[in-house]
Length: 272
Image (tube, rainbow, N blue to C red):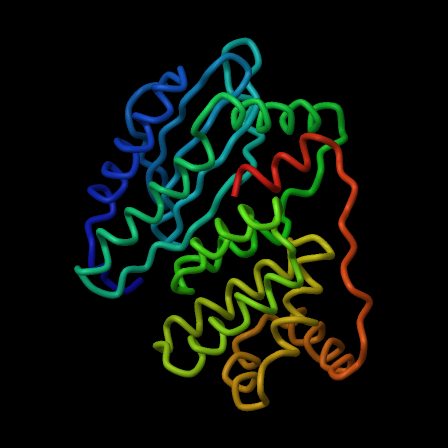
């Protein structure tokens, strides 16, 4: 593994301290000290039936905010990812900026009692076997925030203007131009990170995410732009991209506003 440009433990302590303050204000209590994992560091915070974990995977250069249920004052260990951000500063000047990005993202996810209620509802639905797939377009867009300048602001404006994030439309109008700019002028490491995000989310995303990746973003690239990414894709995404390119130039039915339960709607509109 190549040498990091930062001290992982120091970075984790910065993130944990600041996010932990927000959790404490929302009456979550930290359980013990920072735990050293095989591949990084973690801390756990508990309130009643809900636990949050701040986890840094140093091998994969990732920060994760995870959650699970609590039974008999013990975490049930069924961790699910609430937010995942890559942490790969290329030089010292980027470290502070990426720490801010992680702190802001995690804070948005946990601030206020309504956020905890939404996540707790998801935990309870999982226990009942009725959990919704939360790897939706908004989750995907947030994965792209560290790579695409001003995308976080675009997401906020989208919610203010429309009351929701219009998946395919937002991808075409706001995400695609930023992806094209990155392919035109970004570093090779940034292009590789983009390809990895596309491949990862194509594997685990819902049908909307897979369609956005292939039918909107990949189909919107020029041949030259596409050739920069395609060799870096996973085998499954290569197949999906090839099938999606067969739809290029064809009319696709416009997206319809989905009906959703209250909690699913809240999760889309409030948590990202």
